[in-house]
Amino acid sequence: MDLLKRHLDDAWTLFERACRHLKGRAIDDVQIELYDLAFSLAELVASRVMLEYAQRPAESSERALKEAVTQSFVAETVASLHSRIRLRPGAYGFASKELDSRYLELTDAALDPVELVKLGQLFRDRDGRLPIDHLDEERTLMRSSFRQFAEEQVLPLAEQIHREDLLVPDSIIDGIRELGCFGLSVPERYGGLKPDEEEDSLGMVVVTEELSRASLGAAGSLITRPEIMARSVLEGGTDEQKQRWLPGIARGDPLVAVSVTEPGTGSDVASVALRATPTQGGWLLNGGKTWCTFAGKAGAILVLARSEPEVTPPHRGLSLFVVEKPEFNGQSFE
Image (cartoon, rainbow, N blue to C red; front, side, top):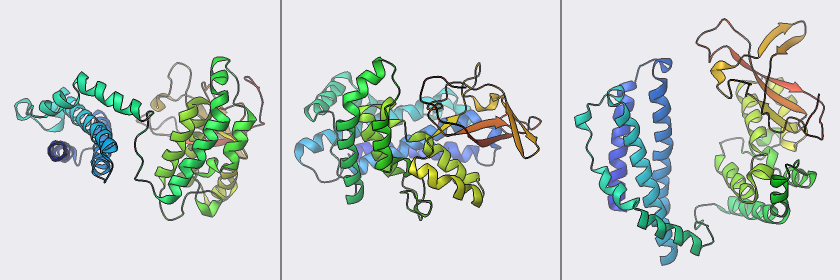
């Protein structure tokens, strides 16, 4: 673990130097660089957490798995950072000859196919599960409750829903609603489960993981839409809008959807063409959207539209609108 930490420390040094080189630049001028570094930052922070996780006291068999998966993850993180910087070193303030290759000793050992096969067997020996010893009592109980629900209510229906292209049944939706899933990203003061004083992304991760273990499509993804809408209203909504929407989102009444993707452009928000034009008493939305998950069942859709077409660059001048609609039980509606 000490050698692994040294390689990770070196990677952090590399990352921080790249950030210093970009400091003071306009974000729009260095989008590619910041996109790459944002990924690397997430991976580096996760690697630091994995190292702490691997060093927690554990039985020998658990410790072997924790150390092996940590070594593999950190090696991939270090390799990814080097790959991004080496692709365009000048953009990050480096000359090619400055970048050493000592990290290859780590990746060659940790990511050797033989070692990965051993890691896979360690997972198989534990039924694919990592030792969980870093959750507090509340999240451990949450994990247990949602795992039980997923195994008893979601798993028996998951294959049929997938193979026969069925709608998610009310039994799953109602169960998720009763467990409070839709309120995971809504603060307690609005009737949700998220503490008012702090973020609780870990709770969202625990629940999403357990539901997705049974089925991502039939359960795990259902709670992402209310999360997106709740965060949007919290960040950009008025006090009146927060009182109007957040308690209902937390209750799962109405169910909600998010509409961003458009025909021909996909989810590239800079290319959003649906126009929002102010009219007497509101806004007129005119254009096309596609691939809006849960759109039929939803009673409200969060729609991304171009409200200021003259504004440049094109990823600006956009607004989010909460559009109410009747709920439909079917795969098509008008």
